[in-house]
Image (tube, rainbow, N blue to C red; front, side, top):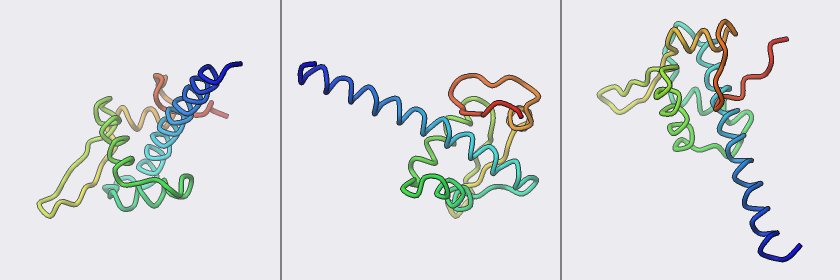
Length: 113
């Protein structure tokens, strides 16, 4: 294997690892929000939960995943007048967490046991 091919393979593996991390982070966020219902889940709370799995997770990464989940109508993100961010699960987000509907790719929901 030549050096260029090796570099390409390493980059592909890194990209796959980043996708897997994002998908699992989304699942962790959905679970935490479901457990926290009916209370709003603050960004600070969710970041603490995510850091239980990924100690190096940043607020920016979490916001990116919340934005993704909101674009799929699984969560609703709110920013109060002081700039504090919180989020709630939508009806469809609850259905995903409770395994009552199929999940599309992008969220690493494990198989129901």
